[in-house]
Image (cartoon, rainbow, N blue to C red):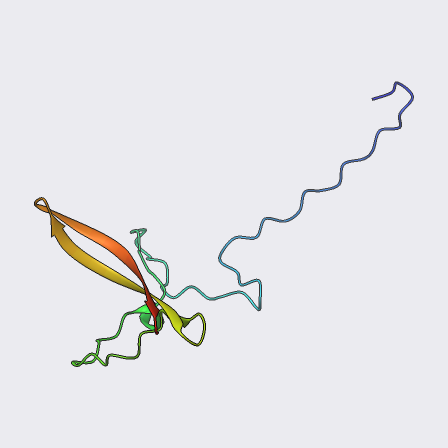
Length: 101
């Protein structure tokens, strides 16, 4: 800083805001009130919307979405396979090409 610089007065610090807030709206009220006896209260938001739901009892097989028609007489298809190789399980992707003639 140069020797002839004028000192800038420091303003009061910004007020400290405690608690939770929502940037899209008004402050969010805590779900659990604080304990009057000073005990630690652990409280969480309800995440019911993110829970997995039970799957249907039956699987509906759909057409193979990984098949691509290359031309009038050719198509390519990708399949996932699992096979035993030398006592180990081999997970692999097989690319198949069909040519009609």
